[in-house]
Image (cartoon, rainbow, N blue to C red; front, side, top):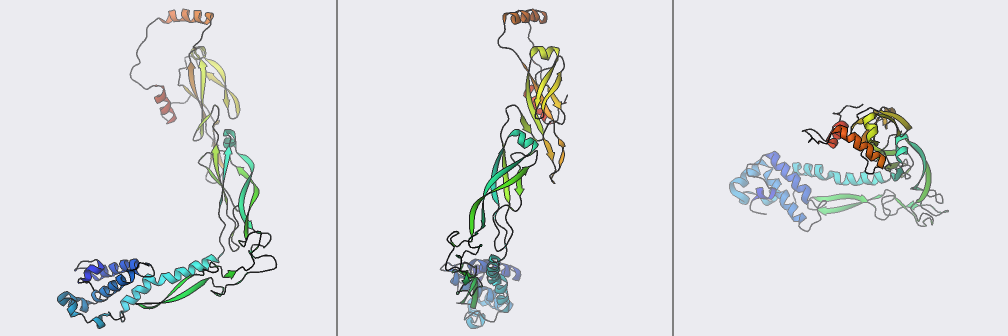
Length: 386
């Protein structure tokens, strides 16, 4: 034994009984042979047990603190086999009793009905399909029970037999002699893989697996308003379950193709519309594309670049958490006044005449927000919608 038992447990000489017990639990979980297969684990565990056996007993601890190991009787302290310490045995039962129980539960769980795995499908939608919804037939690959063997994995005319190693229980028990005495460990049977059955003549179709992967076509109803972040679950169309469990699901992920004119922002649709200087100065009624078709929009005289007009209810359907619709967003039309770069002779003459009436001065812009800042304010809720 090391000279200092407190060092073995990693505690101070003033450690309380609770601190001793806490340190022992931590070290026992780390070095117990059932949890640590290292070459020095058993020796380290022997030191830890001996140290705790002495320091957890008030009388032995007092003698050790006063005389060191010279005040301890090796046989009485448990060095010969660590027997007679009920607190120590109870603690080991509490800490390591779960090992066998976990193995038994794991083995039993392998034979319990379990749902099948989910299948992922990536669906590409047009902008309009994402807005209004669509019904599509898709093809997926999923695991199904083999029709030849009925899911047993055994060739027709044969059947699985009970595993001789585990007797059909799916688990094997091993008794090990340790410094604490006999300990029983339970693990899944390696011969049958925990199923409790052996297949001598595997099915040629599924190669003894009992399942095959097949292509299946299913119909998916996509609600209006989905986007790239939306995931749709089709219940019961995934892989077949284990041991009679339910099928898994199909998880549909979406990718929405970009539109030639429209951009989406939450439930609003944004459209940039170019008008000429005459329409901006004099006003006009123009035709504006929407996802529902063409709409007439009145442009008032004196409209500036960056002006935002709102077409109510021409945006994206709002979907509640229960899948129902809660109306639609709006379409935001951002007007850009286009300055011509090429003029006919007549257009140039008219612009020159108009220019003489405006004068030839230019004024620097005073402090304020530019077009992109104003647009950001509007989209953030600070602007006014026409």
